[in-house]
Length: 114
Length: 111
Image (cartoon, rainbow over all chains, first blue to last red; front, side, top):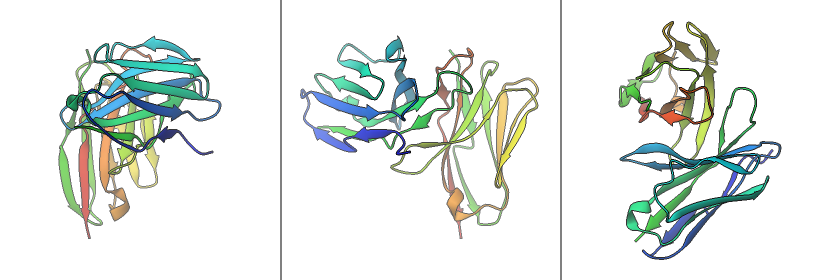
């Protein structure tokens, strides 16, 4: 199995630009999570989906952030417009809904907003 | 909201030595997860504990959840360079899927 796939691995953009992060979960997993990791705040859950439906987006910082999961094999996290304080590593993780909730993480996307 | 505090924040040990990392929760834990992260990479699942008093081992790493289910410890025996990285504990206090994480413990192994 290829594991959770994220793209791009690195993104550098200017303030005000739109940024789209992509995630392909492990085949057969029906839960998907988006996290953000920074030195100051650590690892934070932004939003998660079960069976492609958003369940909890209370961690999304503001309206500039949006996430979609159009099908079981693809999700996007979009930031529009981006700001320097959005610079962080964004992780996607997937899991099987039932059972131990063990989450499998992707390698992350390192976002730098200048 | 639940908070997890890890100690120590960083740890430097000589190769071959034993070490312990602690994770203390502000609320009762329904599930406690230990992950390891290497720089520039994602998190790797190590173990999950659910029952008070539970103990699990994987190779030279042992994790325990205390009886009151508010603290967990991760113990590494005879540490090796491959153990170096950041160890994070995560918890789902509401018995749901939302995990909150500790700030991490950075482990360095000196040869």
